[in-house]
Length: 234
Ligand code: BV8
Image (cartoon, rainbow, N blue to C red; front, side, top):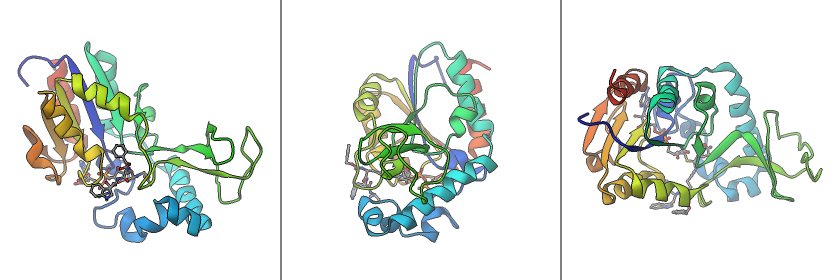
């Protein structure tokens, strides 16, 4: 890292939570090996079998209590505290490990396990219980809560804000993501169009690794603290 960047956008994926014990999607033994994406992560799957989908997310939400943030989450929280420039942390993850690792400003572009969306009144409320038992919406009382996560075919959250940050950043860093899902997988190209430097930190080369000006491969728990040290000057 030569001179310090002034504006950084970071995108994280399931790989940053892997060392905390949360299954990724596409690694061996990952979530999508046990479930068909179409059945549990699409509106059509939810309409077809709401019990299956609510149960899938109930299990993942309950599992959060058994896992803890790792050194990579904590390093990004340190960056948020000490980096003097602009920083936007965008995550594709629906877990709460960035927040529990000390990050205060996290943009969950694919929603969060610990949030409920009411299909009747449209209100989002913090939620850490089950939904399979059809609890009443805390606002309108209708038994129509769904996980507040973005399924395939649905619009990710705060895209305008993300694209605005990408157009002004001078460094884009992608951490722990396979580059398999859009629009997130396209952010590196948006950053390059804005003439930003681009860095991939991932266990192995992602599908989009050739778009990055620099790529480092290894566990996030090692690479991320090392990179944050570099950016903050040790
Ligand atoms: C949309 C939330 C319109 C729920 C998720 C054809 C071409 C292009 C696009 C499409 C297409 N057909 C359909 C589409 C659109 C579709 C899409 O991209 N499909 C793919 C399959 C082709 N996308 C959508 O539908 C999106 N919406 O497009 O709306 C639009 C378009 C533009 C602008 C606005 C609107 C909505 C997608 C969101 C789906 N929801 N999750 C839930 O979590 O249950 S997707 C889910 O998979 C994640 O959220 C994440 O986004 C995605 C990718 O997962 P990763 O995080 O990358 O995890 P993965 O397992 O894949 O990889 C882990 C990586 O970590 C690996 O590389 C591994 O090496 C690494 N790793 C492992 N261990 C470690 C590690 N790295 C470091 N350290 C370690 N220890």
